[in-house]
Image (cartoon, rainbow, N blue to C red; front, side, top):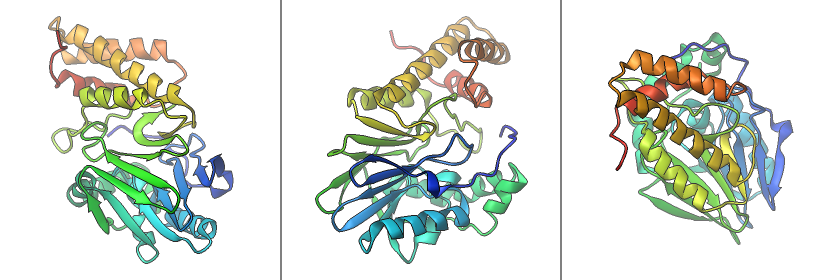
Length: 299
Protein backbone atom coordinates (compact mmCIF):
# COMPACT_ATOMS: atom_id res chain seq x y z
CA UNK A 1 0.00 0.00 0.00
CA UNK A 2 1.32 3.42 -0.91
CA UNK A 3 2.26 5.84 1.85
CA UNK A 4 -0.02 8.84 2.34
CA UNK A 5 0.24 12.27 3.90
CA UNK A 6 -3.31 12.59 5.13
CA UNK A 7 -5.50 15.31 6.51
CA UNK A 8 -8.02 14.21 9.11
CA UNK A 9 -10.72 12.37 7.08
CA UNK A 10 -13.58 14.19 8.81
CA UNK A 11 -17.08 14.31 7.35
CA UNK A 12 -18.45 17.87 7.59
CA UNK A 13 -22.22 17.88 7.43
CA UNK A 14 -22.50 21.66 7.16
CA UNK A 15 -21.46 21.44 3.51
CA UNK A 16 -24.54 19.44 2.44
CA UNK A 17 -25.84 20.42 -1.00
CA UNK A 18 -29.26 19.94 -2.61
CA UNK A 19 -28.81 18.25 -5.99
CA UNK A 20 -32.46 17.34 -6.65
CA UNK A 21 -35.84 17.35 -4.93
CA UNK A 22 -35.50 15.69 -1.51
CA UNK A 23 -31.94 14.59 -2.31
CA UNK A 24 -28.77 16.00 -0.76
CA UNK A 25 -25.06 15.23 -0.99
CA UNK A 26 -22.56 15.80 1.80
CA UNK A 27 -19.45 16.52 -0.33
CA UNK A 28 -16.01 15.20 0.45
CA UNK A 29 -14.33 18.62 -0.05
CA UNK A 30 -11.48 16.87 -1.92
CA UNK A 31 -10.23 15.37 1.36
CA UNK A 32 -8.70 11.91 0.98
CA UNK A 33 -10.65 9.06 2.61
CA UNK A 34 -13.81 11.18 2.82
CA UNK A 35 -16.53 9.98 0.40
CA UNK A 36 -19.40 11.91 -1.08
CA UNK A 37 -22.40 10.86 1.03
CA UNK A 38 -25.97 10.85 -0.24
CA UNK A 39 -29.30 11.21 1.56
CA UNK A 40 -32.29 10.38 -0.65
CA UNK A 41 -35.87 10.94 0.51
CA UNK A 42 -39.30 9.61 -0.36
CA UNK A 43 -42.66 10.11 1.34
CA UNK A 44 -42.14 7.41 3.97
CA UNK A 45 -38.43 6.46 3.90
CA UNK A 46 -34.92 7.88 3.48
CA UNK A 47 -31.85 6.11 2.09
CA UNK A 48 -28.31 7.03 3.16
CA UNK A 49 -25.50 6.19 0.70
CA UNK A 50 -22.13 5.56 2.44
CA UNK A 51 -21.12 6.33 6.02
CA UNK A 52 -17.71 7.98 6.16
CA UNK A 53 -14.67 6.48 7.91
CA UNK A 54 -15.36 5.10 11.37
CA UNK A 55 -17.94 5.52 14.09
CA UNK A 56 -17.58 9.24 14.83
CA UNK A 57 -18.13 10.23 11.20
CA UNK A 58 -21.01 7.78 10.88
CA UNK A 59 -22.65 9.19 14.00
CA UNK A 60 -22.63 12.63 12.36
CA UNK A 61 -24.16 11.18 9.20
CA UNK A 62 -26.80 9.30 11.20
CA UNK A 63 -27.72 12.41 13.19
CA UNK A 64 -28.08 14.40 9.97
CA UNK A 65 -30.14 11.66 8.33
CA UNK A 66 -32.36 11.35 11.40
CA UNK A 67 -33.06 15.10 11.38
CA UNK A 68 -33.53 15.11 7.62
CA UNK A 69 -35.95 12.17 7.75
CA UNK A 70 -38.26 13.79 10.32
CA UNK A 71 -39.74 10.45 11.34
CA UNK A 72 -39.40 8.65 8.04
CA UNK A 73 -37.93 5.13 8.05
CA UNK A 74 -34.15 4.96 7.53
CA UNK A 75 -32.23 2.72 5.15
CA UNK A 76 -28.47 2.56 4.59
CA UNK A 77 -26.41 1.23 1.72
CA UNK A 78 -22.72 1.39 0.80
CA UNK A 79 -21.33 1.61 -2.71
CA UNK A 80 -18.60 -0.94 -1.87
CA UNK A 81 -16.87 -2.40 1.17
CA UNK A 82 -13.84 -0.10 1.50
CA UNK A 83 -13.50 1.49 4.94
CA UNK A 84 -14.39 5.13 4.17
CA UNK A 85 -17.60 3.97 2.49
CA UNK A 86 -18.82 1.19 4.78
CA UNK A 87 -16.85 1.08 8.02
CA UNK A 88 -19.32 3.12 10.01
CA UNK A 89 -22.41 1.09 9.20
CA UNK A 90 -22.54 -0.54 12.63
CA UNK A 91 -23.54 2.88 14.07
CA UNK A 92 -26.81 2.61 12.10
CA UNK A 93 -27.63 -0.88 13.42
CA UNK A 94 -30.54 0.04 15.70
CA UNK A 95 -32.00 2.76 13.49
CA UNK A 96 -31.64 1.78 9.84
CA UNK A 97 -31.89 -1.28 7.60
CA UNK A 98 -28.52 -1.88 5.94
CA UNK A 99 -28.71 -3.46 2.49
CA UNK A 100 -25.99 -4.38 -0.02
CA UNK A 101 -25.40 -6.82 -2.87
CA UNK A 102 -24.16 -10.34 -2.18
CA UNK A 103 -20.63 -9.80 -3.53
CA UNK A 104 -20.19 -6.76 -1.29
CA UNK A 105 -21.47 -8.71 1.72
CA UNK A 106 -18.87 -11.38 0.95
CA UNK A 107 -16.18 -8.70 0.67
CA UNK A 108 -17.12 -7.35 4.10
CA UNK A 109 -16.99 -10.81 5.64
CA UNK A 110 -13.86 -12.05 3.88
CA UNK A 111 -11.74 -8.91 3.48
CA UNK A 112 -13.09 -6.48 6.04
CA UNK A 113 -10.66 -7.36 8.82
CA UNK A 114 -7.66 -7.17 6.48
CA UNK A 115 -8.67 -3.75 5.15
CA UNK A 116 -9.34 -2.51 8.66
CA UNK A 117 -5.79 -3.45 9.67
CA UNK A 118 -4.32 -1.98 6.47
CA UNK A 119 -6.12 1.35 6.87
CA UNK A 120 -5.19 1.60 10.54
CA UNK A 121 -1.58 1.38 9.40
CA UNK A 122 -1.88 4.28 6.95
CA UNK A 123 -1.70 7.15 9.41
CA UNK A 124 -2.24 7.78 13.16
CA UNK A 125 -5.26 9.97 12.42
CA UNK A 126 -6.89 7.22 10.37
CA UNK A 127 -6.06 4.66 13.06
CA UNK A 128 -7.80 6.87 15.63
CA UNK A 129 -10.86 7.19 13.41
CA UNK A 130 -11.01 3.38 13.16
CA UNK A 131 -10.10 2.60 16.78
CA UNK A 132 -13.48 1.18 17.81
CA UNK A 133 -14.69 0.09 14.38
CA UNK A 134 -16.40 -3.25 13.88
CA UNK A 135 -16.97 -4.83 10.49
CA UNK A 136 -20.68 -4.41 9.72
CA UNK A 137 -23.08 -7.19 8.80
CA UNK A 138 -25.84 -6.25 6.32
CA UNK A 139 -29.49 -6.79 7.23
CA UNK A 140 -30.64 -7.37 3.64
CA UNK A 141 -28.55 -8.95 0.87
CA UNK A 142 -29.64 -9.02 -2.78
CA UNK A 143 -28.02 -10.71 -5.75
CA UNK A 144 -27.86 -8.32 -8.71
CA UNK A 145 -30.64 -5.71 -8.59
CA UNK A 146 -32.88 -4.30 -5.91
CA UNK A 147 -35.61 -1.67 -6.14
CA UNK A 148 -36.11 0.19 -2.87
CA UNK A 149 -39.47 1.94 -2.46
CA UNK A 150 -39.05 5.14 -0.45
CA UNK A 151 -42.62 6.27 -1.08
CA UNK A 152 -43.35 8.07 -4.33
CA UNK A 153 -39.75 7.41 -5.33
CA UNK A 154 -38.02 4.15 -6.19
CA UNK A 155 -34.24 3.93 -5.88
CA UNK A 156 -32.49 1.26 -7.92
CA UNK A 157 -29.47 -0.57 -6.48
CA UNK A 158 -27.41 -2.42 -9.06
CA UNK A 159 -24.38 -4.67 -8.54
CA UNK A 160 -22.19 -4.01 -11.58
CA UNK A 161 -19.84 -6.96 -11.00
CA UNK A 162 -16.09 -6.94 -10.63
CA UNK A 163 -14.51 -3.56 -11.48
CA UNK A 164 -12.97 -1.31 -8.79
CA UNK A 165 -13.88 -4.11 -6.36
CA UNK A 166 -15.81 -7.36 -6.57
CA UNK A 167 -18.91 -5.89 -4.94
CA UNK A 168 -19.25 -2.46 -6.59
CA UNK A 169 -22.78 -1.10 -6.50
CA UNK A 170 -24.30 1.93 -8.20
CA UNK A 171 -27.34 3.73 -6.84
CA UNK A 172 -29.74 5.32 -9.32
CA UNK A 173 -32.59 7.72 -8.58
CA UNK A 174 -34.51 7.54 -11.89
CA UNK A 175 -37.04 10.33 -11.27
CA UNK A 176 -34.18 12.77 -10.54
CA UNK A 177 -31.65 11.44 -13.06
CA UNK A 178 -29.05 11.03 -10.29
CA UNK A 179 -26.37 8.34 -10.20
CA UNK A 180 -24.09 7.49 -7.25
CA UNK A 181 -21.03 5.64 -8.53
CA UNK A 182 -18.86 4.99 -5.48
CA UNK A 183 -15.21 4.64 -6.47
CA UNK A 184 -16.01 3.60 -10.01
CA UNK A 185 -15.67 7.33 -10.67
CA UNK A 186 -13.61 10.11 -9.17
CA UNK A 187 -12.84 13.63 -10.33
CA UNK A 188 -9.47 15.35 -10.15
CA UNK A 189 -7.46 12.20 -9.54
CA UNK A 190 -6.14 9.02 -11.11
CA UNK A 191 -8.49 6.05 -10.85
CA UNK A 192 -8.01 4.04 -7.63
CA UNK A 193 -6.70 0.53 -8.37
CA UNK A 194 -6.59 -1.52 -5.14
CA UNK A 195 -4.32 -4.15 -6.73
CA UNK A 196 -2.46 -5.77 -3.81
CA UNK A 197 -1.30 -9.26 -4.81
CA UNK A 198 -1.54 -11.84 -3.43
CA UNK A 199 -4.07 -10.54 -0.88
CA UNK A 200 -6.47 -8.67 -3.18
CA UNK A 201 -6.55 -8.86 -6.97
CA UNK A 202 -10.29 -8.38 -7.51
CA UNK A 203 -9.94 -5.04 -9.32
CA UNK A 204 -10.28 -5.45 -13.10
CA UNK A 205 -9.35 -2.62 -15.44
CA UNK A 206 -11.05 -4.34 -18.37
CA UNK A 207 -14.37 -4.90 -16.64
CA UNK A 208 -14.15 -1.37 -15.21
CA UNK A 209 -13.99 -0.04 -18.77
CA UNK A 210 -17.06 -2.10 -19.72
CA UNK A 211 -18.98 -0.85 -16.69
CA UNK A 212 -18.10 2.79 -17.33
CA UNK A 213 -19.10 2.44 -21.00
CA UNK A 214 -22.56 1.26 -19.90
CA UNK A 215 -22.93 3.94 -17.24
CA UNK A 216 -21.89 6.74 -19.60
CA UNK A 217 -24.39 5.47 -22.18
CA UNK A 218 -27.18 5.83 -19.59
CA UNK A 219 -26.53 9.62 -19.61
CA UNK A 220 -27.53 10.53 -16.04
CA UNK A 221 -28.29 14.19 -15.33
CA UNK A 222 -26.24 14.26 -12.13
CA UNK A 223 -23.27 12.04 -11.28
CA UNK A 224 -22.10 11.78 -7.67
CA UNK A 225 -18.60 10.26 -7.75
CA UNK A 226 -17.07 8.41 -4.84
CA UNK A 227 -14.67 11.32 -4.30
CA UNK A 228 -14.44 14.69 -5.99
CA UNK A 229 -16.87 17.15 -7.53
CA UNK A 230 -20.48 16.33 -8.37
CA UNK A 231 -21.10 16.80 -12.09
CA UNK A 232 -22.88 15.39 -15.10
CA UNK A 233 -22.20 12.60 -17.57
CA UNK A 234 -18.82 14.19 -18.30
CA UNK A 235 -17.61 12.71 -14.99
CA UNK A 236 -18.19 9.20 -16.37
CA UNK A 237 -16.79 10.04 -19.79
CA UNK A 238 -13.63 11.45 -18.22
CA UNK A 239 -12.98 8.33 -16.14
CA UNK A 240 -13.69 6.10 -19.13
CA UNK A 241 -11.24 8.05 -21.28
CA UNK A 242 -8.54 7.75 -18.63
CA UNK A 243 -9.04 4.00 -18.15
CA UNK A 244 -8.75 3.46 -21.89
CA UNK A 245 -5.65 5.64 -21.96
CA UNK A 246 -4.07 3.67 -19.12
CA UNK A 247 -4.91 0.35 -20.81
CA UNK A 248 -3.63 1.38 -24.22
CA UNK A 249 -0.36 2.92 -23.00
CA UNK A 250 0.30 -0.11 -20.78
CA UNK A 251 -0.48 -2.71 -23.43
CA UNK A 252 1.50 -1.03 -26.20
CA UNK A 253 4.58 -1.44 -24.03
CA UNK A 254 3.71 -4.85 -22.63
CA UNK A 255 3.12 -6.27 -26.10
CA UNK A 256 6.55 -5.04 -27.19
CA UNK A 257 8.06 -7.32 -24.50
CA UNK A 258 9.11 -4.41 -22.29
CA UNK A 259 9.63 -5.40 -18.64
CA UNK A 260 7.05 -4.24 -16.12
CA UNK A 261 9.33 -1.85 -14.24
CA UNK A 262 10.07 0.02 -17.45
CA UNK A 263 6.40 -0.02 -18.45
CA UNK A 264 5.46 1.49 -15.11
CA UNK A 265 8.14 4.15 -15.29
CA UNK A 266 7.21 5.23 -18.82
CA UNK A 267 3.44 5.14 -18.33
CA UNK A 268 3.65 7.00 -15.02
CA UNK A 269 5.76 9.77 -16.54
CA UNK A 270 3.46 10.06 -19.56
CA UNK A 271 0.23 10.19 -17.58
CA UNK A 272 1.56 12.72 -15.08
CA UNK A 273 2.67 14.89 -18.00
CA UNK A 274 -0.83 14.68 -19.49
CA UNK A 275 -2.66 15.17 -16.17
CA UNK A 276 -0.27 17.19 -13.98
CA UNK A 277 -3.03 18.57 -11.75
CA UNK A 278 -4.49 15.20 -10.73
CA UNK A 279 -3.99 13.70 -7.27
CA UNK A 280 -3.42 10.02 -6.50
CA UNK A 281 -0.31 9.42 -8.61
CA UNK A 282 0.44 6.32 -6.51
CA UNK A 283 -2.49 4.56 -8.23
CA UNK A 284 -0.84 4.67 -11.67
CA UNK A 285 1.62 1.94 -10.66
CA UNK A 286 -1.08 -0.40 -9.36
CA UNK A 287 -3.20 0.29 -12.44
CA UNK A 288 -0.32 -0.68 -14.72
CA UNK A 289 0.29 -3.86 -12.70
CA UNK A 290 -3.38 -4.82 -12.90
CA UNK A 291 -3.59 -4.27 -16.64
CA UNK A 292 -0.32 -6.11 -17.27
CA UNK A 293 -1.97 -9.13 -15.67
CA UNK A 294 -5.14 -8.92 -17.78
CA UNK A 295 -5.91 -10.17 -21.28
CA UNK A 296 -4.72 -8.95 -24.65
CA UNK A 297 -6.42 -6.16 -26.60
CA UNK A 298 -9.31 -7.53 -28.61
CA UNK A 299 -8.76 -7.67 -32.35
